[in-house]
Length: 315
Image 1 (cartoon, rainbow, N blue to C red):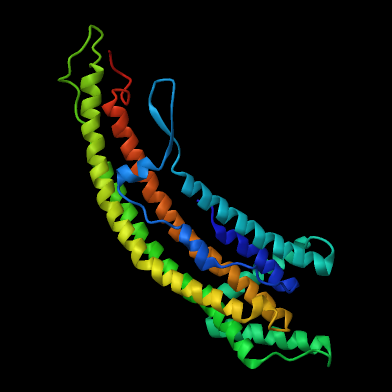
Image 2: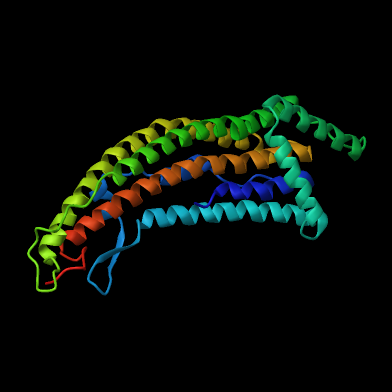
């Protein structure tokens, strides 16, 4: 699974080198593309399908809506990266050096291990040092805006991460339980099927038995997907509420124009990128997992019904 969190590395590099204005982006509105999955038949109905040489139905992708979701996530991640690299170019006229990249990685690791209060103190210290280095002409920032920037950082980096980690842990438990139960279901024996002179069972009988197995898998998958969907629905409003708070604060801060300090601008930009990543990483993975598991189980049953799932048989 590709993580949109990869965009944060570029943002971290930007944090250490150059101020960056936030993207003109409403993350909450984009979350409207995260549609709650239905039952197996519903997920299968959204798939784009084809036929192979054996006349089996095969899945090309799990739905145009999921293709568009992946495209949007990739495009927005690219926009964050381009914005970061453009900011680097404004000050250096070239890509960051290997040493700068390594320094940024070390900085990111240190920040990750800091408490929210330590992160705030670090950022304030950096801002003060930058202002001293800029000389007397540096314009001090409004204290309420400074507070809002750090509040946004806390929501995006700490609160959203904690919520997503909790969601991901519960999702992993359901996935493990699903895999275990599916592995315990065994296909029925075809020893009682009519056979030809080579000993192969008839396709009608073989596929009927396999169809019974596939129906059991559909039932198990649907049952766990009901639980996974309920879990998604319980966390989605909470994730969306925190993301909406980040969106609102970014607008209040005029996408970074309301603050003068480069460090504060960088912190806000990094927070927006982190919020985007948190909005889609676990939620989209959960949706795609449900749709994939359901559709795969259902297409196997369709092929059984059409006597083409099991090809090791005689007609």
